[in-house]
Length: 395
Image 1: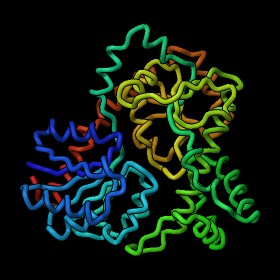
Image 2 (image 1 turned 180 degrees about the horizontal axis):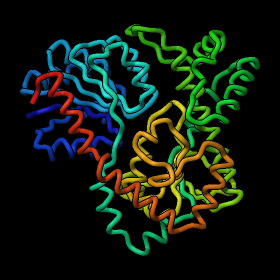
Image 3 (image 1 turned 60 degrees about the horizontal axis):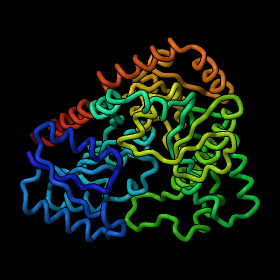
Image 4 (image 1 turned 180 degrees about the vertical axis):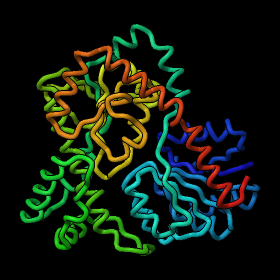
C-alpha cells in the first residue's frame, strides 16, 4: 500500500508518519508547504496531481483540511483523508468539504457536530492521541540532572497567545470594545460551555470583520463564516490570552509557577519564565519532572481534548486541566487526571496535590497506563484505516 502525506510541518506529523510506516505502508511525502508558506492552491494541486498520476496511491493524507488537495483527489478519484488537530480551521467552510472522496476526521465533538451535516457520509469524529513509544524513550533516559533542570511545582508549557491575538490590534468603537469585554468576562467564569458564538450581534461581527484587512475571505464557501471566525479566531484568541495571563498570575501569588513559552511574559512578574522548549526532546522531560502540569485549553476547542492533554499523560506526568465535556468519555477525574471548573477549585487542587505526593503519583501512573493502553497513535490510525476500509473498499 502506498500513500501520499501532504505535509505543512504540524508537530504531530512525524508521529503519524512513523505509525503509517510501522503499519507497513509506503509513505511518500510532499513538503511544498513546509518550505513555502506562500504556496498557492494551484501549486498545491499540481504537486498532488503529479504524485497521483505517477504512483498507485491508495489515498492522500494531511493534518487539517486543504481544499486544493480535496479538489485534486476528487477530480482524480483518489480518497483524501485528513485529521483535524486544530480549532478553528476556516478551510472547513470550503465547498471542497462536500466532496465524495473526502474522509475528514475531526477531533472535537462540537467541531464535528457543526461541520458533519455538510457531508455526513464523509466526516467522522476521532480524538487525538499520544506517541507513548517516543515519550518513553526520552523519559526512561532522564538523569538526575534532567529532573533538577526541568523539575517544578507547577509547570505550564505553551503560548500566551498575546502575539497571536489579532483582536487587540483592531481599531474598534468603544461600544464594540465594551460588548466584547463584557462577553469575555462572562465566558471566563464558565467552563465546559462556549456561548460566545451565539451571543454575538450582527453589528459586532460586521465591525470586527471590516476592521481587519486580513480577515479570512474566500469565494469558495458554502456558508457565511463571519460569526464563526469572529467568535473563535478573534475573541477566542483574546480569551486565551486573558485567561492564561490571569491564571498564571493568580497561581504565582501562592505557588512556584514555571512557564515555558516563546511569548512575551513581561506581564507575569512572579512567574519563573524559562523561554521555549523543544517539543520532541525537552517538553517530555518537563512533563515527567514537574509535580503538576497545568493545561489551559483555548476556548475555540469547545468540547475536545487538545494534544497537550494526551502528551502530558503519555509522558507519565500529572495533569491538572480545565474541564472539557469530553474528559469523562476517556478518563476518570480524580483517578487518571484532575480537572477544575473555577479559579478557586484550581487553587485548591494545586495546594492539595502539592501536599499529597502519593495520590498525585498514583494518578499520574493511572493516566499514563490508560493512554498507553487505549489512546496511542497506533490505536487511532487503526480505527481510521478500518473506517476507510469499510467505507471506501481500500486495503
